[in-house]
Length: 407
Image 1 (tube, rainbow, N blue to C red):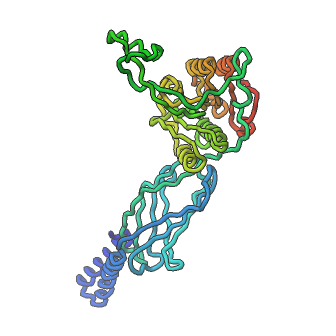
Image 2 (image 1 turned 120 degrees about the vertical axis):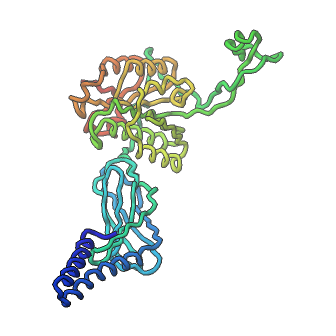
Image 3 (image 1 turned 135 degrees about the vertical axis):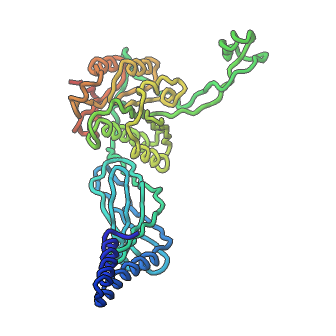
């Protein structure tokens, strides 16, 4: 494909040729032919360099945390010899825009390097990637499309917490300490006809009444997660712009709590109330934890339903967990009712409330929240509550033992 400069040179050569023919100036013919041949030579040069290519991106070892600079190393393998400086990599990275990187031959390979400055948490897909081949004079250009299925993950900046606020001794309204249940149980698998000698305690009365004969419950052993962290990704509750938003603080809090459990060998799970609900078990602090960290890196506030709907599913992983921590910036009466119900049933429950008003008071005023009264109700029911605000020391707050008032 001719560049703008190539078109002008070709047009100039043609114009000079016509002028030489019109005025009979033989001296202009070589000039005209030279310009046209230069364009043709550039086109031939570029097409000779067009060949199969393979690009490799390499990121520095270690986790890339929110706010860090992310250096990206590039290596291009091409068949045959390619002169240095004739190739440029053009990329379009989601939410980070386009960039062009010249590839220079070093140590026998075509290499390039660029740095993404202060990148927020997120999953940044390489949406498009192509090699631009251009002749030294910029007359002809060819674009070779490359596969672009990779992405760059930037993880949330988590904190280490030795002892969580929820472990400081949650109690019932009568002052008794809540006891932990066994991380296992039995779920209803199916129903079948009653057999002589079976205990009547296994009778499934709704099916019995419907069929007019005794039906018993067929149970199966079902392991439960010891603790679950439920992250609210409802888009309607987010205040502020990333990286300074209520949701970013909620992600850091949920990840730090999950990390605290996983690092101590506790069976845990991450649940995300998003447009596509996520459930990731963390039973080991290597593979499982890394997969959960990837979920936290890429999660977006795209949910379309309140977080209480997750708790309404009695058979769901959040309801089945022995202990549950909800991280949200929307404290509704229905959610409080569910958490109080868990506490009264001697099921562990705690709440991390991210105060949206601390990020943008004008926007937060549109959210229907009476947080103070709801938190007081949770406190009276023995549900541990912590309130996070913009600028808080996250490690200190997650390890605090007292409830922080909203005001």
